[in-house]
Image (spheres, rainbow, N blue to C red):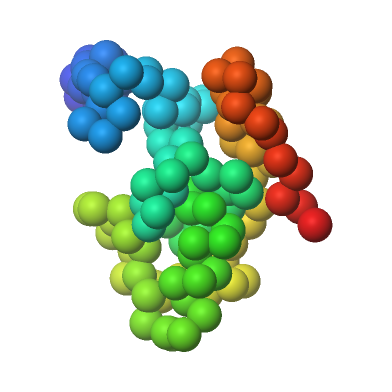
Length: 118
């Protein structure tokens, strides 16, 4: 079972992206998770990534805050997410490691890196 998962994960990492076909860096991998550097709501590169403590998915802070600002019934937008808990501000944790990876990626692409912490 574990080798099947490893084969599947490798196949997914080698699969070209549908929205960013020229960009293999869209997928980030750490020791236990594989996730995108792109926000699920805006489809743009995240500038201030946060992780949902309930399901582990990542969003850009501005887009998730805009989504939950007017509604208390927003669920994780990731297709297949098993969490039935509505997203709340206190569920979101800043992900500094992912933020640094995104800033490094942007610098490599020659894009201006902005500091959105303020």
